[in-house]
Image (cartoon, rainbow, N blue to C red; front, side, top):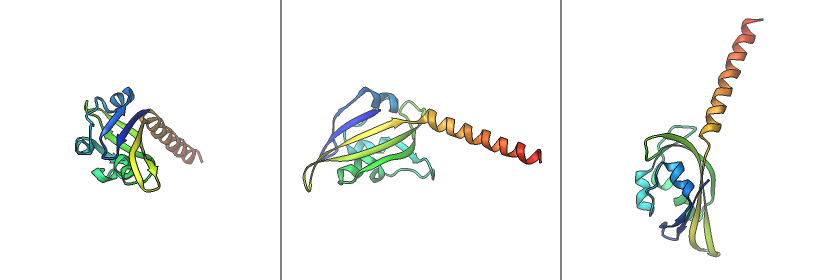
Length: 130
């Protein structure tokens, strides 16, 4: 699980080692860096715009959990992640920053895809045997 803590401007305060492992090297220091991140929505394949990242939404005061994204890492590999973000609120309307969490679910998604293939093959076999 990769974790970032951002200040109210979106600048990275701290992150853990897993963020580098998930992203194949991390180049995030502030929101301007989001242009370097490449991702698509897992369900539609549409490209993620900068304002759709959980980090940006969290800095607007919104909580978004488990946005499923297909990413291209900085080392050129592809992964599927869950992208979550939640604001850190000082008082009612004062956003002090955000916590961002990325979870690599690549293997889980690959297993789900293989399971669907097997189920489809079983269904075809059942239809032929009738």
